[in-house]
Amino acid sequence: MKKEWYAAKELAGIPGFPSSPQGINLRAKRDDWKKRRRSGVQGKALEYHIDNLPDNILNILKLKEKNVQYHVNKRESSSILIEAIERLTESKREKVISFITSFGTEGLIELIDQRQADNPQEKSPLKQED
Image (tube, rainbow, N blue to C red; front, side, top):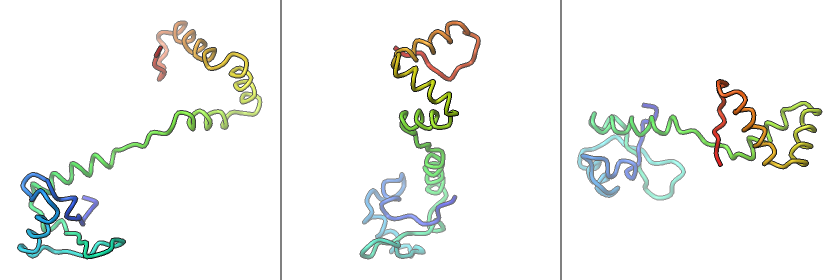
């Protein structure tokens, strides 16, 4: 596991653990868990070390951590389009802008649809949507 310290609110509600942060804090105090103060937080906010946690809880936390690890931020479509156009040579960029100015995005979609119809065996990441 990459993360070694957890706040009570992160542990609350995990099956086999108290459902509230207060319950986690009481259990930690009763069982004398290894703890530290949370940095950047006012008050007496504490974090508890993973060595305090039973294996079944660690397994649940590992699963949650893996989900976060593979989270991919989706970029806005417009920023992808802008970046693609900016990477073109000047002459190709002018050609694309001229086409879209003259025929609009519908004209571009018609070209894409025609290419897909002419080359059905060609693998394309583009999905046909109406």
